[in-house]
Image 1 (cartoon, rainbow, N blue to C red):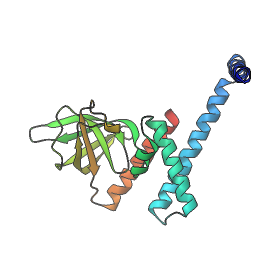
Image 2: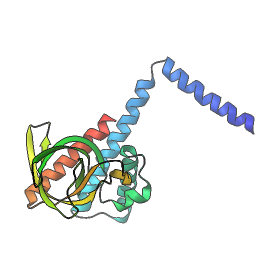
Image 3: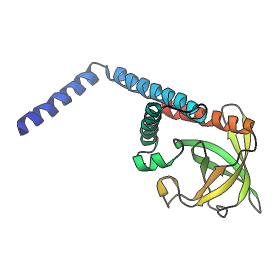
Image 4: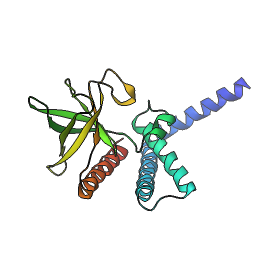
Length: 197
């Protein structure tokens, strides 16, 4: 029995070696990226329908599977249970955001984004419950998006990482137009994360 396992492992190693040696590895990677991109597109389509007309039971189950897959892809430390608790996939991002505290205007790095909010790195987070205006710099267009937010966590990063100094902010959009812009930002960042990995 052990011999068959070893020969199976040897066989897989030979296949991988042949793929690398024959320069077909880029093709394998391209197929994997194409699969990720197709899952991303399917997730976005189902999520839009979920927020609009709703999903059938089978579609909802598929949406959950895709959400779990993408959550694990972008944040390997996230369990299925944690992914199920979230309304949307949390996407790693590197956008600049500015906000004003009681004393000064501060610039911070947004390290992740979801449909419901962001986590920004800062050494001086505001108190939980504080409301503020967050300006998100949209690097690709040169524009910015001003969004009312509420502080919902302090010094607890994604995955309850307490070594990450910053604050979790929940979006409080004041119009349908603002919500549309936030949705576009989320989908654009999700696409970049799916394609860029």
